[in-house]
Image (cartoon, rainbow, N blue to C red):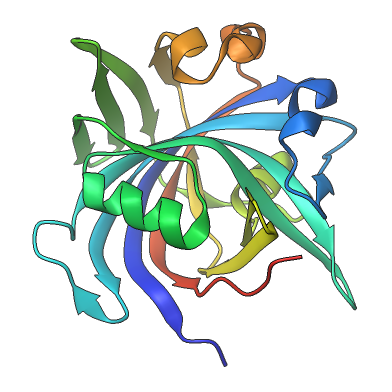
Length: 237
């Protein structure tokens, strides 16, 4: 069995989800994968969350255990010998530490960038507010959500399950396709009642994403998160 390369707690995943034209995403597909559709649609998600108690090969790294991440991802799948492996591919991932970005780019080929980041969480009885911010060009950009009540499990076959239950990561590399597995239990979610996404999309992700990410989000929720294990990269084809 493969040992995990990285372990952490992923918590309070704010997930803002948009319908995307497949033609927008097809040029970004890692070789050997195809777009994963749900009810005939493909999606982009802006996701902000906390990495807590992060360990590499079981060892905590000083000053790099707890930090924020914000990413833009879409949903793919790859045929294996006996099933479909449902996963995600990333357009860009933001973290606040340069060392984290370098390791992720080098070992996994992931499109990480390091920028100043901060977050604000308020989780009191009956109310949750999750806010993630990153600074570019002297300006703070924001992804924020509020929700109330208790988190609920996602229904099998639902949109919420589709967004939260992808367990593989795929990245295009010069030598082919990088594939790795992310293991975690199913997450419960809060449906967001308010959302805020403020960013210069053209310079953050590219002008081709402005239309999709300026449209009305089709869903927004906060996943409670869990401990996760990121396994070693398993193949290049």
